[in-house]
Length: 178
Image 1 (cartoon, rainbow, N blue to C red):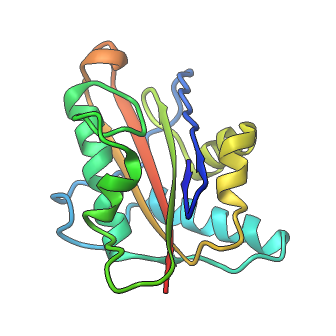
Image 2: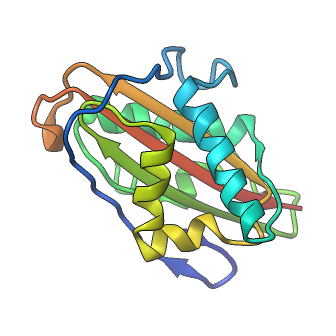
């Protein structure tokens, strides 16, 4: 999903598949640190490798975008939903703007990719799921992005759409401002 001047593309990815080996996931409180799990670090490397293959700039890990991504991943696993919209129904870009502000910038745009898998996933599998989805591939390969926030949250039992299963939910928030 991308939000820009007059561009609004709606995308969603719901992936449920068989078990894979567990990967360490974020265990710190939302926004407390920019330390990344092995899954998040691997995903950052995979995304930047993909972008390099397409002649695009590498993305820097952003503390505000990571806080936005982490808050959303935690909300989805706690409340049992999977959507770009926040739990209160507000648009994804409004949620991200609360962390990655637009005031004082003449250029501001954000995008988001989501994935979930039960019980866990790895960076290469997550990237491949996004590449197999044209809207998610487009977000990954959007040239204007300069920063990324990543959050992988694993829980032993998630309610709602996750049917009480163990699940790993990943949010990738992309941004540029200047």
